Length: 344
Image (tube, rainbow, N blue to C red; front, top):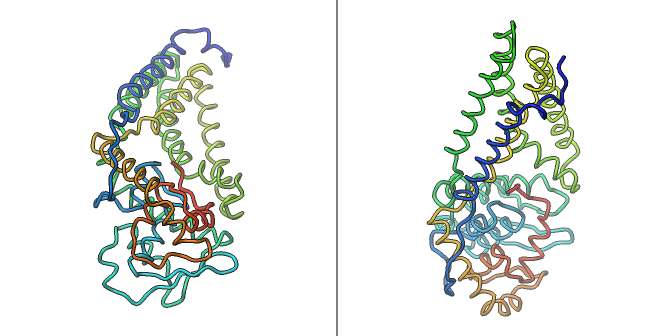
């Protein structure tokens, strides 16, 4: 079998990888970076189109414990729930106010419906991370469906072009380097490209976040074992495919195919960027955040101590939590859900 270092000495193997990297770098420089914010003008009210959780998603491109805290503050302000602190966390009770739900954003309505089993109150604390993680995941899913494409673009056409060119090059090289086993090399190259690309995306979206959560100590042991088993299975199947491809064609060809897969998967999330409308919304949110910091912070701190959730109808509290304006109750509540994070 050929030397696994052959690709480094043969420009036919490493030059395509360099070209693909340069292509993605150019796309990122032109399309993948968030546009710089313009002049920030103070805003005295939040956008009517952006709920507190949506505002946080737009700023951080993800959902976390503070997103959940903002949703709960909004539900309390609307009279949908009552929140009472206890020794370990918070006791949340659904209020008998059916008309209040009509003014909720989709992710807020989804959280309200999924929190309760009948009339029983819900207890949220760091010890029941599975519940908070499920609620945060629901918020993330709802916001992705509603905001992506309008406020964010993933530039998928550029990723699709990079993947298509990678497939064509790898298949052509498979035919040229396979000798008498052309069909086998062609089939294995196609299989490795397709199979490993799909599994690589699954690993990035599901397995990697689970492993990170496990290392932070915020994932249940059973879920960690499942994620670890999936990672081992993917590694084993991918290794078998790459090894078989190396035998059918050359080790250098197998290395290059694997490099093309890794490069496409690694660059895809980096190309996500704000749209022009997203930039405008970010500027408005930053203006509103500055207003909250300069005018509203002290009143919020006075009204909302860690042991006393807010009882007013003021929506500013939920936005203050979402936009990282420090105030006692929101900070305490968000820290209770620190382990409920959807990776950005």
